[in-house]
Amino acid sequence: MSDGGQWFIATVHCYCSEFGVRRSALHVALLRDGTQISIMTQIFERRTPNAERRTNYACALLRDYRGNYLLQLRPANATHAADLLTCFGGRCELGESAEQCLARELHEELGWRPTHIPPATVYLCDTQQMIASFHPLALPPDVTVHPEPGFVAVPAPPASLPGLPISRWHRLVFEALSLGGSLPITVTLEDPTGPGRHCNQ
Image (cartoon, rainbow, N blue to C red; front, side):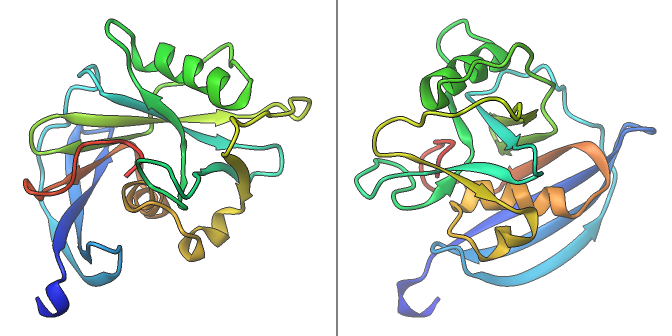
């Protein structure tokens, strides 16, 4: 690769819940800066993974009453995904379920604690483990959010997502959702030498 570019490969799996098999995969070759290079589609079938596998991080596919996604703009000095947009959420603590983690994280990051966390519609994995689960949530219209100092809550219409500075792993999740098909979807990162397994990459 010229200019010292580095690759990572992602596979987007679409599932057919009626038959419990994986029907297709979209292979996206990207540079480390997130630039898309090529796409290859592969058709195959496998069993769906166990949805009960433990995840390390839990994130919210949070929408406001207008249908916009509510994303977190991270500060320039953030350890992960500096100056980029990510979904709200964070790391699960010891003994904490994904749902418990996400309720706690949303309270810490937005000052809002949802009373119910729906099941995940997207799972982010690598070849070794489940990295993160992404859960669809609707922000009640009467709720005012209060982001943590240095962070900004950004409403993003779905059509605007391709042009926004979204962190690469979260962008892959939104791209998977845009393909449509049966839920849940699993996005698998297949580069074993990639960066650390932090949800806000």
